[in-house]
Image 1: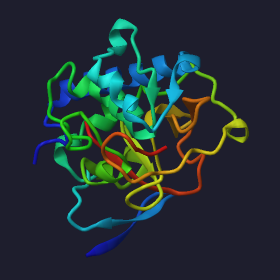
Image 2: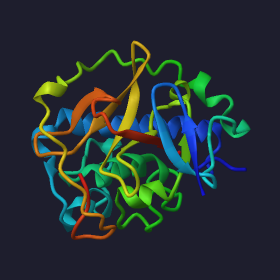
Image 3: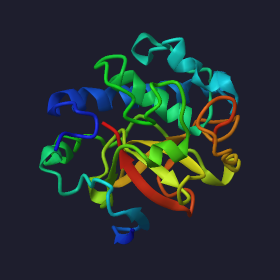
Length: 166
Length: 67
């Protein structure tokens, strides 16, 4: 069976770097990253704002934020189809994220770029893993106007599932 | 059909049809390749100062969305 993204090993490594780079860039510029559930939340992708060029999404909610992070590697560099939401990179939410990708069962196997889904399907929130601190997976989460925030993956008590799209 | 799955630190319900990465040979080397993922360049935010994440509209297409 192919990987969740169809990318090979070396491509996946590069893709994870790009997704993490995007999340960190947005967090550094969080004063300019606004929270919205409106249509503007997809502008980061439709306007092709590429983190490797120092550009970031200025409007997002939680799911469009993590989708934009992953898009930086999956679609912009490797031209994959929308394996995150199955919506041609034009839409989606936590419900569609539950319907795509693969499950990470063991915390020990969590990798950068994996997504933590909070609340049972269709989900209440999602954040992207950007690495570990003292062994604990760390996420960047954009769930409100002051975000994105950098937090432990279990900063909420309703961690339901971790999924991989890369 | 729903199966109960237990991991380290979290358990969740998942459809039995979901593909699982943990036993997938295609990902066998990815964990080792990600060993250097220790974060040293960021200071975590204090979760006590983070406002509640906003709710989920359950809508896949704009307008609408989730937190």
